[in-house]
Structures are given as C-alpha cells and as structure tokens.
Image (cartoon, rainbow, N blue to C red; front, side, top):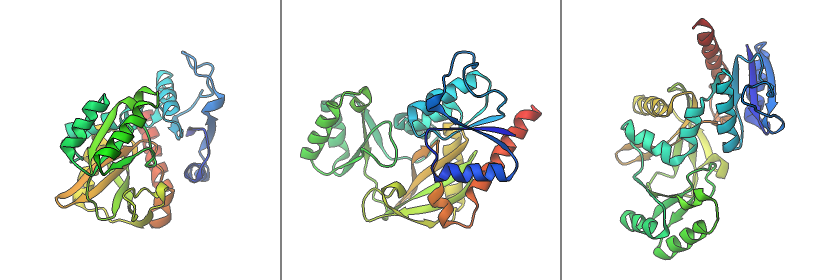
Length: 286
C-alpha cells in the first residue's frame, strides 16, 4: 500500500511507524504539511495515489484542517477528521463520553469569570481548570483556593484567544498517584501502561514513570465504548482509578506510544501497521 505520513516534525513515534511500514515493503510518502498547499480539488497537494494518509501532525489546527481536506479529495485518513475534531476539543470529548454513558469526571463549561467561579464553588477545592484545546498536561491548573481560582481565571481571560475564554472546570479525581493509557485500534486494546508521579499530573510528557498495565474486562469494555463514542480509529484512551472503578478523562487522536512501546512486550508500531493494512484492505474490497 502507499501511505502518506502527514507531519511537521519526525519524532521517535513517527520513526517507529516509518520503519515498520518500510520493513513490510509499503511505499511511504512523507508529507511535511508546512510545505504543502491544499486547494479545493486536491491538485496542489502531494497526495495523488495514496491508499491512506496517517495524520501525525503536532499542531492541532493543522491536524484538523489537513484531514478535512484529504477526506474531501477522497483520501482516507487515520484518524477521520470527525474523530480528530472530537478528541482535540475537551468539551466535545466530555459530551461524547457522557452521551455514551462512559464514566467521566464531572465537568462544567462556563464563559465568564463570574460564572466559572460559580462552577468552582460548586465543585469545591481542589478542582481542575483545563484548556479546551491542548495536550501533554500544559496549561492545566489544580485550583486549591478561591484566591488561586481568581488569579488563574483572570490570567486566562486576558490571554486574548477565544479558547481561553471557554472555562472548562472539572472535579479533582483522587487517583492513586497514576493514570492509565491504553492504545487501541477501533476500540480493541493493543497495549497499556500506567503513568506514575508524585505530582498530580502523571503524563509521561511531564516526567511520569511508566509500567506495563494488564487490561482486564472492565477496562477493555470502557475503552471500546469510549473509542466508539468519538468515532473509533487509532487512539489513546486515558483512564483514572477511583474508589468506584475507572473514569475516562481523555481520548487522544494522534496518540504517542514510544513510552508504551518501551515498557511492554507488545510491538506497538507493528500492531498499528497490522490495523492500517486491514483498513486499506477493507477499503479496497468495498
């Protein structure tokens, strides 16, 4: 198959995928989206003859628009633009999870400092304030007091971009010093790991230590339902353990897996390419 790898920077994750694809004899076209132009009919973009485009863009805006353009040119993308749009926006993700009855942290969305303070007062301290768009745990704040809430909200209100004026307030979940990342293909778990830290943010990108996690039936069912809720694809589903089971707090559409690949016996890029091959074969047989 001929695969277009959409990127703006080649990281270890992309190198692993490129190596696996090439080792299997697939033709890979690396497409730096910063150098391309995407017209209405696709003639200006370097996408002719692709069986599939694999979106690995770091930038959320590029990811959302380039997948939309390629789908308009009848080039299948992983992930689909609708899935990317849902996963990229925390409000849309939360609504999708809640609509599918997936346990997810209590969340409220407000649009002024005053109404956000009312939400924070209802949740009590601590609670969490997150950007609606963002990854790697950046710009997230654990709010421990009224004065801290006032300061963070004021800073966000003056940042300028409209997204900072959408206040996404969430309950603080008392987790056991770790969360769980499951990489899945169309809801089927490939492998999973825990990410542990003394800090309340346990992301691997924030320095959390990783260890393989065995996916049991309860987590597998939650991953399948959460994946379906956002449109399926190659996804990273993040869960936290609570006293009542698990809660899903995020689904990632350009999932990073290098940390997972380093701590498990599962060949994660090989499993991803297995799934890509099945996707292309299914498209051809239709």
